Amino acid sequence: MSCPSGTTPELTVAQVLKVFLPEYLDRHALPAHQLKVLRRLARCRSGELGWTVWQCQQCHRTHWRPHGCGDRHCPSCQHQRSRHWLEQQRSALLPVRYFHWVFTLPAALRPLLLQNPAALYGLLFESASATLLQFGQERFQAELGITAILHTWGQNLMHHPHLHCLVTGGGLTAQNSWSGPKQTRWLFPVRAVADMFKGKFCAALLRCHAQGKLQFHGQLQPLQQPTAFAELLGQARSRPWVVFAKGSVVGPDSVLEYLGRYTHRVAITNSRLRAVDAHSRNVEFTYKDYTEGNRIKAMTLSGVEFTRRLLLHVLPPGFTKIRHYGLLGNNRRHQRVPLARTALETSSLRFAPKPVAQPPATPSVPPLSCPHCQGSQLCCIGRVNRSGTVTLFLRPTLWLRTPAYADST
Image 1 (cartoon, rainbow, N blue to C red):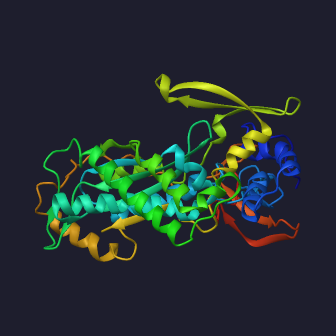
Image 2 (tube, rainbow, N blue to C red):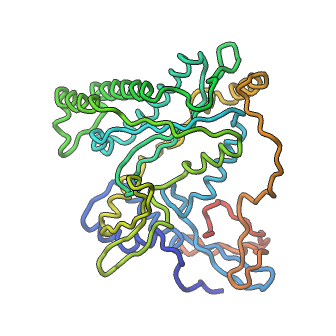
Image 3 (cartoon, one colour):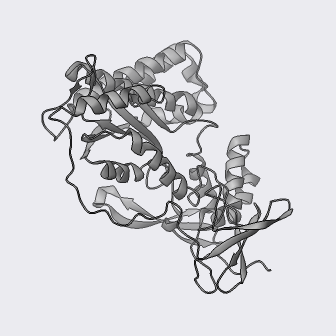
């Protein structure tokens, strides 16, 4: 048995960090959790985290696959996690129209967010969900179901925190009946939602400041003073906050597909990377220019700047970036979702899809193929951990991959 030679055809974030992370660390000190994330990403599928040894049952040749890092910020390790998460959500889907909302924060508050990410990202979740739930009670006298997903990036990798919310078209009333909008174009008036969201977020932010829960470093130190902080909030309040409704989707499969576009996403995918120039110390990647009709353009950054922008999107340790509220809340969905389904049986708002022929189901874990003969009958015959310890399996397992990110796909 021998380790394969050659490089991965697709350029990866791991390869970029291998080139530029040492230079970045020479110039900048990092918090322990950020350093841990970057080192994981740089080692992903490089062989430093270990290998799994496979044997083809057709040509009987062996080959090695490097282990992935499994980090939630890694673009190479999210596909299987996303599929598994989406299948877990299927049991909580309701036969109604779902509406997609996006909540953003003004640029004036972003420096404060970078110094207090856990507290302020938490406020973003709380304020957006409370706004939608309050509108549900006021308009329909019902409890909505909400799935909220945090993204922190724009296409150019700059800091652009925003929340994607998928909201049920209606909710469960106190009498356990279903109440919702009579039309399908919109759920609530956007401007009214934005104004309430702004008020809730600013009020909660002011309470955090009064309770001493915020940190202020460097140029933000003057904001420790109540008058300076009130002035910042005044500037933020004086401008419209961007909240928009992106349309709706119906049907369990369509909802899962729609959710899949936003869950387990990371700041940049490997497919957007074009080139790394070790001589000029630059990275080139593609991005969508929304000001020009989503036109695809190329951007070149220094490796150090690329690394800095990646760090803007490293979440605080243990921070939950996908949350459920209302009747989909984790602590009550097992009671509320069955009641909602019962209520929808007699509701005119129920979406009843017409039976259609389903395509053959694809396995949640795509089968591996032999790189030598392309055969699909592979057995896992051993593993090598990061310290070099070899474990050979007496009973080889046919294309078993656990955890899902353990092997390169």
